[in-house]
Amino acid sequence: MHLWCWLALVAFIPVTSSTSPGVKVKITEKGLDSYFLIQLSIRNSKPSKSPIFQGPKKWLPLARMQIMNLGLPKSALTLAPGTGVSLSISNAFINLHGNWKVKYMNFIKDSGSFDLSVNGLTITTSISVKSDETGRPVVNSVNCGATVGSAKIKFHGGASWLYNLFSKFIDQALRKALQKQICPLVADAISELNPHLKTLNVLAKVDKLAEIEYSMVSSPVISKSSIDLSLKGEFYNIGQHQEPPFSPKPFPMPPQVNNMLYIGVSTFTINSAAFVYNKAGALSLFITDDMIPPSSPIRLNTRTFGAFIPQIAKRFPGLMMKLLVKTVKDPGITLEGNNVTVQTTSTVTAYAIQPNSTLTPLFILNVDISVSARMYLTEMRLAGAVALNTMDMNLRTSYVGDFQVRPLQNIFQIVLKVAVIPRVNAQFQKGCPLPAIGKMKLVNSQLQVLKVRHSVI
Image (cartoon, rainbow, N blue to C red; front, side):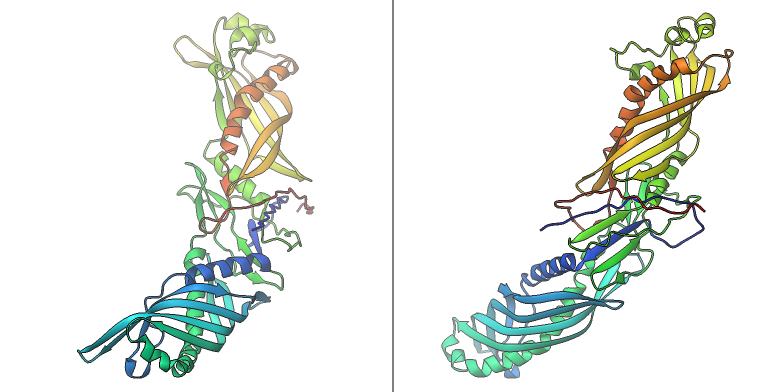
């Protein structure tokens, strides 16, 4: 099964409140047809414990039937814009095996098995697709029509020789009985898709700090080529669903419908993650010397920094240092063709660690950092890795007198590369769960980053 996932990452622009989704899912006819027919086949491959036919005066109940062979040579799901899905099956056949049992009064008992062949089966039904109260899709059979070309039965065991003499009569009765019961069976098969649809992870845990909501913000939109689901796609702190100070911007999905599934993730979703983690304090980090590789010539102590800021070495000789990197506003996302750039505005506060472990502030720098993010898919999660692009610094506050910031540029770049970015990537590689149903897996998936231009409001 060729399953192609296109994650369309598009630019975020703050706007007024909106019901626009953060994530979109497009299920094409190809994907819908495969999923439904697979589920229908799985459902009907299970034994049926209920009698589906009884002869006159209930003298020949047939029960516990199991489908041995199911053929759907001409089957199709077509999308009816604005209404639902039409299922059409023609020239189908079913071979079943089951048991029969006779019980008359208290003295005639007999049993055996049978083989039933049903041919020329035609079914047409319409399926509605809506959103339930939990924000998950739900399907139901709206109307149905069915015809059975022929039904032939062969009895085995017991007094089968006798029943086989009346096979033509039984065949006709079976055909009529089956024809009446096919639509209820189809309705049941369609309804039994709903437990699978209810496994949509409308609230998926990301880590100990965050979860992402994938509930539907509106009913599915059905066109001639696809069913489009609009999902909230918003990060929240676990147990604290506070809305961010921005709203999702409408974004288009790629027009292609050649593959089974397309998923579009907007930068509203990414920005809501930045908002959540920043609010939780997860974008702040203390950097100590033990986080620097032993082989590095750069050490976090007053001797190293004293080479560039002499007053530090003079006033605080022989002390270790600690840096606090703190993001002062939510990171911003810029998207170009197949490239994601994250811009952060942070402060770096340098401390001298006194012998009694108290921290003495030395200076505070304003730091603008630009990193490139490489996005990739791992199973059903969207993951990433960042690499440093540029870093600009300027002095915000000094507690040791004026000094030149530029000579410190190389030191802080090394600290970022060896101490900060590896920890960021360790979190990014864990990934964020994508919307999924059951044990759904992506096969032959592809990812593209798209740029969509919006006017700034």
